[in-house]
Length: 235
Image 1: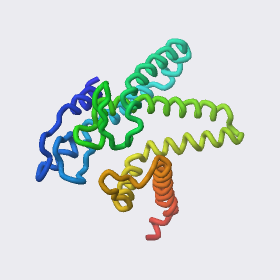
Image 2: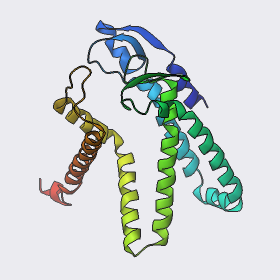
Image 3: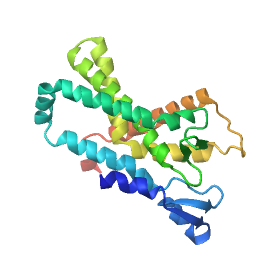
Image 4: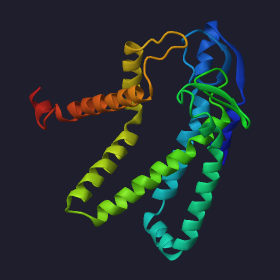
């Protein structure tokens, strides 16, 4: 519980002034005043997602055989728990969904439930952190269903397509930091929108995101296949 509660509590620790030599505090905590174009993605509050992934992976990897056996015996209970958890996460996502018309990645919207902030001073807010959990659960459910169908359709076209899609998502998750670094480098060199003006609409943003993912995937492919076994011995 502390692994999730502590990052959430740190969203309320806001440094008043992050200008001058104190600008590096914004790498860790939220700030009220910061320098123009400085980074505003404090790491400590975002540990909420990292810690959640650690807890989930430990729970699933502790004893997979026992977990599957327990789910098989109490499938009705497991389904009930999943449905209740889904309802709770869907309710927690309502404030973020209310601000969906704004720029999702960098928004500061006051809703009747409270502020939904990310990418601006005072962000990320608690509503932004918990609001994404329902989408993550849906993605996990889709991947689990795809893997389930792929295992039962081995040898045909559908099984190959689903297995490829799940394996690529797994690859994306395992190398997400590399994807983020390449995306930051590309965006820093390619985009500098004027104040209040954004050159891409929703479709342009989706196309740019897909292009960045494909470029990074190609770079990883080149790095993994560029050196053949035995090349190191000839060097």
